[in-house]
Length: 140
Image (cartoon, rainbow, N blue to C red; front, top):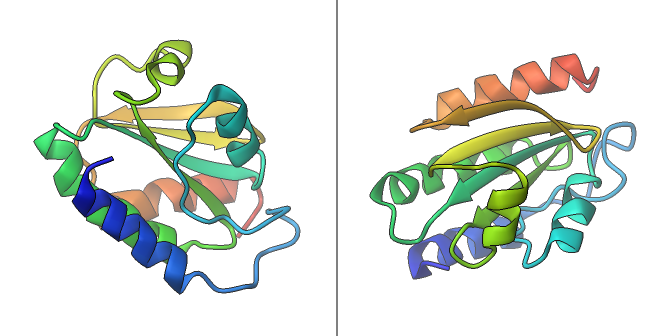
C-alpha cells in the first residue's frame, strides 16, 4: 500500500471510538484493507452498509481521493464499514466484482452490491453516498 495511504489508514484506526450502532453493525466499522476474498466478505458483513474504495497505489486520482475516504470513515465510524481494496495486491477481488478501473467506489447493503461509481469523489460526495445507503438500509 502507498505509504501516504497507509499513514491515513493508521490515523483513522487510532481515532476510532469504541461505540457502534448495534442495529446496523455487529462490530466496529473500522477502516480496513482485505488481503483475501474471505477477509473481504468478513469485512463487508460487519455492518449493514459497507463502502468499498478500489484503488491502485500508482493512481494519482486514487491518492487525491484517499483523504476524503478517510474523513468519511471517521464521520460514519460505527455505522458503516469502510474497506479499501488495493487492486494491485488483491486483483482477484477486482475481477470477482468486475471493477475495471480505479478509482471505483462500491456500496454494499447486507453484503450485496447496490451501487457503483467510477471516478473522483470528494468528502461531500462520500457523505452523500453513505447517507443514501444508510437511509436505504434504515440505519439513520
